Image 1: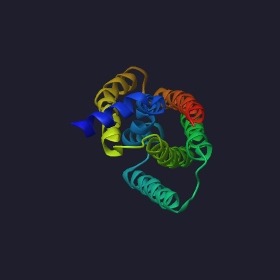
Image 2: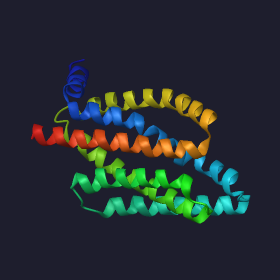
Image 3: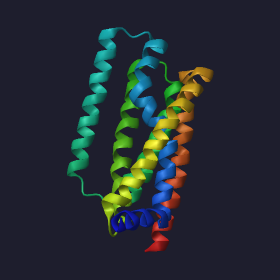
Image 4: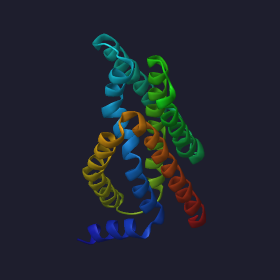
Length: 196
């Protein structure tokens, strides 16, 4: 019981952890649209066939694997490079997606968005672990429980948005959501600087 209390209070008392949790709600849309909806958009917008769709999926999966390998090898500790720049790059990719008129350019932007989210995810994980001094597993489990609650609610909201406005506009909203996430993460890093 004491371990649970210690982990819970450590989570509650960290403004940085609260901000990283809140920003993750906004980033559910960019993640959801690049995992569940970008192929649908390609078929609807560009009329690609099954073979081209499979090829595009394979290319993005390979790019994701390369990004994961790169993250394992890098030794970057600068949070601007790990969190802020990738989040900005992701926002720009989503804002450009509805404007491109050829499938290869769209797939390139999807790759940028996915790779950026991998980088920012690794940086956020490092930041969150840095904020917890004792009972890390318990504090992180509270954080992940909150994120899971966001994932229970967010798809209903984003599904309503897609139904009302269509996929093309939803990519724009994913860019805006990424910018909100960027602002919150910048605030978290400012607070981190004050705390240290």
